[in-house]
Length: 68
Image (cartoon, rainbow, N blue to C red; front, side):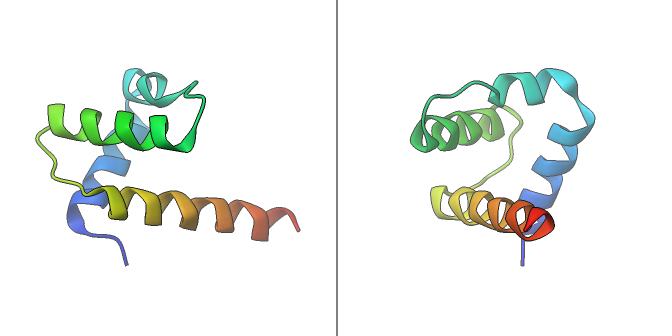
């Protein structure tokens, strides 16, 4: 289950194009995680690396399940 902070972060990213753009185009998972943590910090949302990785994995699983 996602924390309130992760839900808040996701809501902001899904509703604001400039935030989505800030997370696009990273060459590696580590770069994406680092960018996500940095962006969350600028929004004064406290996320941990494990929480970001867990959300990323859950999203990947959801996408695969939808298309398989």
